[in-house]
Image 1 (tube, rainbow, N blue to C red):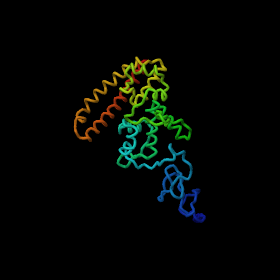
Image 2 (tube, rainbow, N blue to C red; image 1 turned 60 degrees about the vertical axis):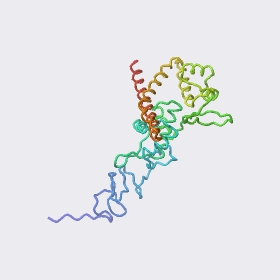
Image 3 (spheres, helix red, strand yellow; image 1 turned 180 degrees about the vertical axis):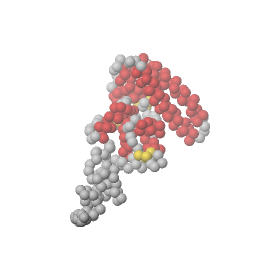
Image 4 (cartoon, helix red, strand yellow; image 1 turned 120 degrees about the vertical axis):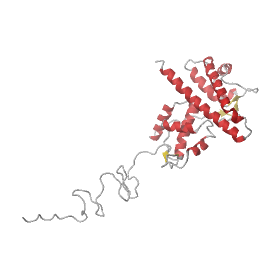
Length: 293
């Protein structure tokens, strides 16, 4: 029996299966989306001569005009945000990650690495919580809209009007007048008097209030629109004062030391405990509301 005639191969097809697409160098092209030795085919099958994507794989997460290179440790992020948000802690940053508001990269050893864009997303979330009292669910939705390229009204920052008409944010330890609070929040003089009578805001001997009174009045007015008057909020004030007493007992040994560093640690510990109390209270309140049916 004569041997079967050898099939003629076209130039550049040696070593490949029939029907496989040919490359310019004669080697078989990969069709399974796996990386070639030179690394130009990615796991998703998208390739380009330099190994980068050859097609648009979606919009850049917000904000697009800030570096997305992961180069900052969680401690560095805390240092950037602390001046603007004194109560922020490492636990808070981890919590925001758990809630899906930010997704830092992880090193081979498991350490978090944040980009400048991550910092801006955290700043957006913290500002929305502090100034607009938005729940994390709404903030997460807003960030998703921003990621998709949709316009979102940014949360407003707390501002007061000075005598020369300039709008500025009240810094830590600032004092504001009743007129400034009214102009910012829309509260009437009678409403401010009611809140002061309930002990929610307290003026000093010169009739000026701490800058935090702005946020207190905003929250109280929002509750008032739902029929919750200032007198119903006295228990909230009393509870806060009791929790502050407990925190004071915990950090008292640090505050009693003469070292300035120890006092700073005491202040930081107090702020962190206050944040934990806030989270605990929020969860307990949500649980109690769910039981209402």
